[in-house]
Length: 212
Picture 1: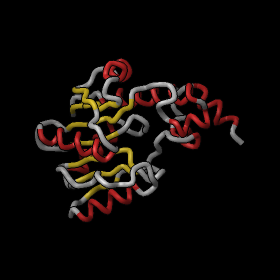
Picture 2: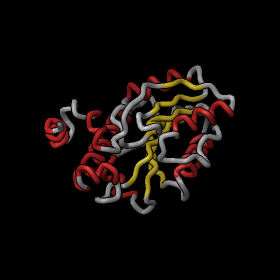
Picture 3: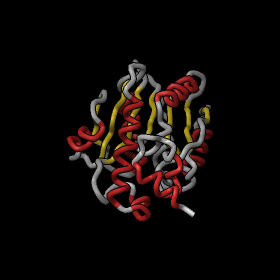
Picture 4: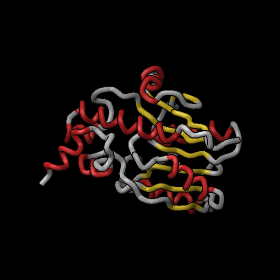
């Protein structure tokens, strides 16, 4: 079975996405950047080397999510519960259909490219897992060759998520490869991650050029 790349997405709605970023740039710009970043990620993930699944929330927003992200292998509503429970549920569903690898990514890191997915898959040829850490202490990519007890009970949205995941991997006796550290788009300081891209919203470059 081909690898599955599972994209976690929240339906784009004003005031409901990128709330920390919105405090700095406003809700409309935060939504615009969120939509743009999701488009950029999905453009990279449409590749015959793997299946791309989108798991979305809220569960009644499939149509809005499909309009935003476009065609993919499968759309699945996220499970109820906290992030750990939702991650665990979709990973279990993916492995129930066949052996790995299974990769988890979000819609807010433009470093999630076809090349980075291929790099993770190469790592998984000789490791149980691949971890793409983010500068904020979380991670933007997690690849697994088999189900591992990594998700439930973690303190999500904290600066220790990646380290806690490494600890869980050690406890499980799993080997893993570390991918390059990248930035999620969560705060105004993270805009430097996309300023070099000519397709980024024009206000990003203007804002950074005016920064002291």
